[in-house]
Amino acid sequence: MTDRPLRLAVIIGSIRDGRFGPTVATWFAGEAARRTDIEIDLIDLADVPIGAAAPSVSPPPQVLTALGDLTPRLEAADGFVVVTPEYNHSYPAALKNAIDWHNGQFHAKPVAFVSYGGLAGGLRAVEHLRAVFAELHAVTTRDTISFHGTWESFGEDGRPKDPNGPAMAAKTLLDQLTWWARVLRDAKATTPYNA
Image 1 (cartoon, rainbow, N blue to C red):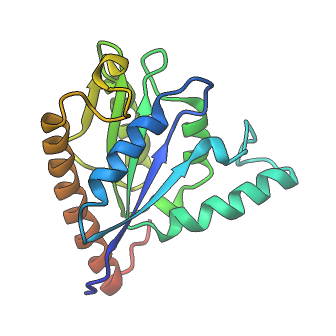
Image 2 (spheres, rainbow, N blue to C red; image 1 turned 90 degrees about the vertical axis):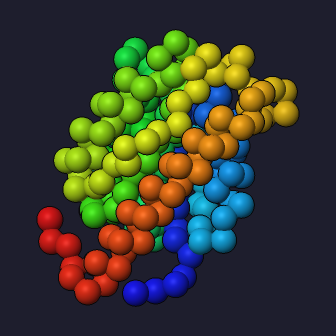
């Protein structure tokens, strides 16, 4: 067992123009940074130009470069927080493509979700992602953070207008995620996970 801080990769799943993901992810990373048991790696998929290249084909050089930057960061993570909107009752294509390129990097690691959107708050995207991550041998946390009516929920300062509810939800999510991350990290140190 180790006492080193847990490495959490916070992944911004949307790459669309006008996206709200960086605002939500920056808020969440700030909440997580208050803890001494966590190191945050904020990963913005807009900075990872893999486009629509499929894992089953020989990728062009720019995709290999992008993967060369992203893959080690995902591999080093003890757990993940996926920040996602909901597009047409599901999650963004760029997020799915990034996940598809990285199967083994998610094995026996926990994944939590912070979603945002309109009335549903991105929860339908989260439900779809749970099945995807189960296929990758990942463990998803029960509790999520969901912002309904996102644009009205945040102030111009990039923080929730009602800070108390989201802060409590972040604490609950982080408590669950760090428990799973620590338990799985320690278990893999003594018994390798073979998928």
